[in-house]
Length: 302
Image (cartoon, rainbow, N blue to C red; front, side, top):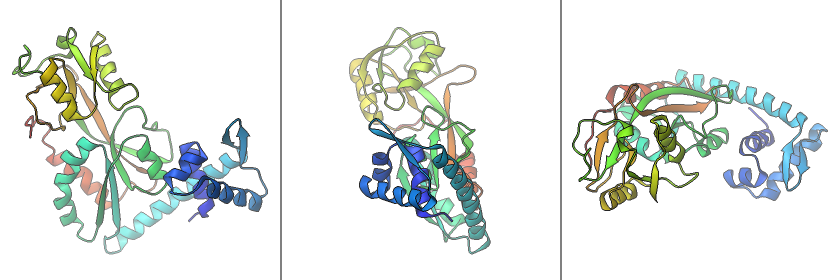
């Protein structure tokens, strides 16, 4: 178990700024700085150094963070084993992107609770990289996110990542489009169409661009939207096209068409935890349920 001030230093190392770290932990920046100054005085070392308007961790601080990471991993591993050896209770705070939350996690809550009746479950809608800040800050126990920008590399020893399932990606076309009703199309089929994309720096923007570039074209972007319902409404109303998750739901005349190719276009979903917290029976049950009961071939719309 760590001195709380060392936990504050770990969060600062992850988030990058005192203001951001303080906001994440619902503290004032001044109070946050005082706690770190107190730790530095107690240890007799400088932990932070000023660079313009920002602060950076000193070499001593980074050594301390490395030590704190090892201790926290060991503590989480011990806590998990104690929970498993007791009555199987405890808590499981799961964060997931909206499509995964509604189509993967929520339908399995009954089965998960039946397998672990004493487990307290809390769900949150999250996205990367914010959810990894929350893992470090001990505000989440696990998050379910796609492998994409914002997800730390596998070499980051603060986190554990496991592949859960491949989320199929479909084309979204207006009802009058030649591809509507076909059993499947290649992405290159849509090279001459106008597109709806999420805005710059929004989730999904680079993913769609990368997929189109891999298919040999740059999409002609006409509209920008991220919410699935807004995207499908624009597709149906304007004749533009887009891509959507197989797990996303919407209410409009836009038609979902499977993308073909080898490999079939999709995005890998990862279940991520803080290192040391990955081997719990509840998480194992959740992964097994997702893999066994997810209807990835279901193209039905609400």
